Image (cartoon, rainbow, N blue to C red; front, top):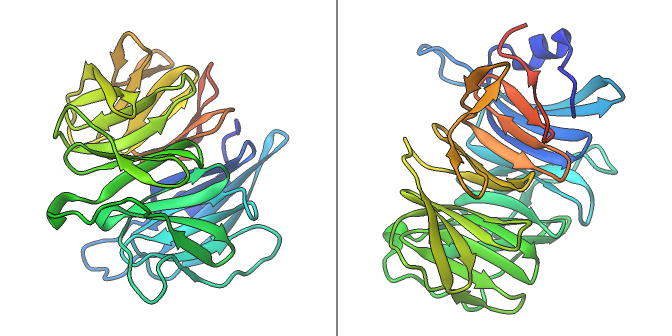
Length: 315
């Protein structure tokens, strides 16, 4: 993914919209979730999921549109089919898109019950979601989600026990974080709570390519595994880090109002683009080929050498 979108795609799908999430389907396909900007007099705003496809030096596109926006996150899957998933945050309904057929039935993560979803992540090719009261679910087939909760204890205090993020090296080596120092490890059979040396609020986790697990908290960035953790740098955040990823031998993180890059020695809160500082706040995803950041009004791709603005703020 390296080309700027054509003006006609920008005019139809980006002008007057703000990006709220992003996800990488493969090295040539990305999804961008966008909500229509509305005035104070407007009661409803539209929403769309934009698919951008790199074909040679050109960008092709597809989209799904909704007459009324809703709070959602976007995720992708490789198994059982490669496709995108729009996941309703407040209820847990799932709208699949793409793959070997045009239309798919709407799925419910938790049958006959609402599930507040906080994060969706692809692990070993399958979509996983986490949510309120330490909820963890995995999609194992089209339309089939199962609870992965063996060993997870019902929290005594329900006020701050949502899992906010999940990541894994494999499906048998997964970490989920949230709450005040609340971090758990799943070995493919059972969840066990990890000892963690702080009750700071944990917001994001990354199982990195160097074999370490990185955890973003409100005030520090942590590194370790299981019950051994060390703080590696202080964080001064406006809000929180919501996405944490390993790319190009560095840890990258961003949130609605924050951005970080840790190279193992120093912490940066902005990058240089054409000689000027650029703060990449928003949402983030990555694959082995590039890092993707969707800001509110622009989308950026980094291949390890240079940043490319594939969706400019104006055209």
